[in-house]
Length: 120
Image 1 (cartoon, one colour):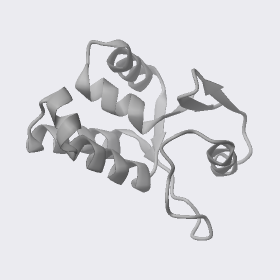
Image 2 (spheres, rainbow, N blue to C red):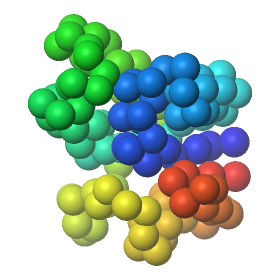
Image 3 (spheres, rainbow, N blue to C red):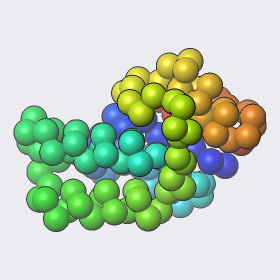
């Protein structure tokens, strides 16, 4: 199954690798294909660099870079068509569901726990 995790879930996975988000991230990556986009990766890098978020996860610049590299190399990066806005909202909205439905070729899309899109 192809899965998109909201950037908030990824931040929580970094901040607490043994918490629910961290366990979810590990299980999904082991059994499914994580889908992201270059825009979401940039957003994740920016958020992980926020001072208040750095206090939560306590990672060094090198560790943040390693996590971002893990996402970039381990995920299927979907590129949005140029005609779509280049800004990716933080919250999942019906528009994001429509975008990922289009990117998946019209395959089924489900919201799970309000934070993930699953493209089957």
